[in-house]
Length: 143
Image (cartoon, rainbow, N blue to C red; front, side):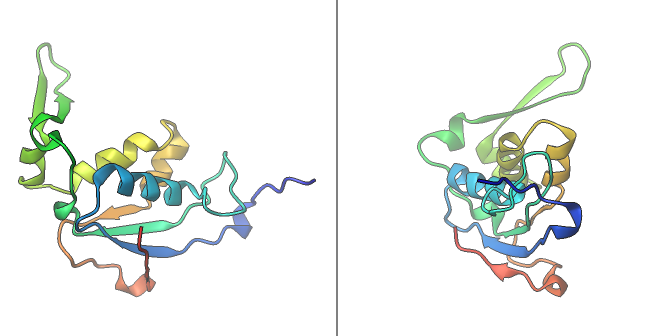
């Protein structure tokens, strides 16, 4: 048996559009993270970025199950003593940047390394149904 390692010139990246309307947050995020990493390809190499570009539309209509709308907290810190601020998921989804809920879920599923940060840059999330990436001819992806 032979294991092949992907080379930079052999990497083929595609663009996909995912409609998040009615999709469960965690299940959608796992599929997006897998595509961003490239684990769905036979040329997957752990130390290289071989994943595809993902455009997510209707991120504000993503679904959270159970009591997560009222109980799930998002934290941020100002780096000053006592500067921890927490926000409930319902306030984030109804706020100015509802796409951050999905971005946060996907970011948590990627590697916490410089490679993971480059993978995350291939994700584009939009709250509405419009996106400016029509020039890349993205394929519709049903997850």
